[in-house]
Length: 262
Image 1 (spheres, rainbow, N blue to C red):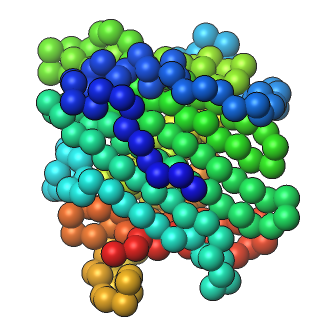
Image 2 (spheres, rainbow, N blue to C red):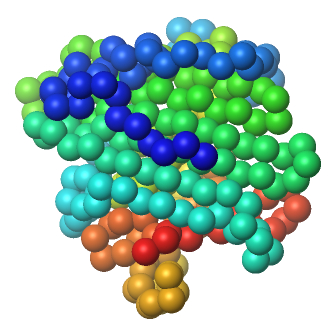
C-alpha cells in the first residue's frame, strides 16, 4: 500500500478541498465501472430515483472530542492468525474542520482482493464532502457526495448530502456517518451511509462488556460495540473514543480482525 498523501496546498482552509475531494481531482485508474445494482437499490424503502432519506439526529451524549485526538491510525488485518492486509487513517485539522483520509487493502484469497480509498471532509462536526473508490474482485465502485447549502443557524451545514454512486443518485438529510469505522458516533447511529454503494444501512448497536485488548504487547482498556443490521461488525474504542479494533465477518463465517498498531 502507498502512504496517505494530503492534496497539494494543505495549509489553506479545508473548505477549498471540497470541490477537489467530491469531484475527484485524482486520475481514475483503468478499472471497470460500478456494476448494475438494480436489485439492491433501496433507500430505507424509498425509490432510488430522486430519493431523499433522513438519518438520525446528531447525538449529544458523546463525551469525547469532536475529532480523533491523533494524526494517524494504522491497523494490521489478520484472519486465522495470518496477515491479510492493512487499514490506515490520516487526519488533518484546520479551522474547525477535518480532512480524514483512509486506505485499506485486504487479500483474502487468490480472487478475493479488496482495496479502498476514502476522503471525508468535516466542518463543525458535519460531513460536507465524501469521495470513495473501492475495488473488489475486478469491479470499481465510485462514490462522490457533497453537502448542499441549507440547514439552520444552529446547524449551518445541516443541508442534505447529495451524491452519486454508480447509477444511483442519493440525497441524505440530517447527521450523516459513513461506514468508515473511526467516527465516535458510529455506535449511536440508527443508519449509516455506505461508502461503497451509497445506500443507507439501517443498524443497531449494543454495548459489550468492557475489556482489555492486547495491542502491541501492552494492555489497552476498550469499550466494545456489536453493530447489527444491514451492516455488521464489532468495534472497540478506548476512553478517548479512538478506534482500537474492528472485527468483520466474512463469507466463511470467520472474522477479519483489524488491530491497531500502537
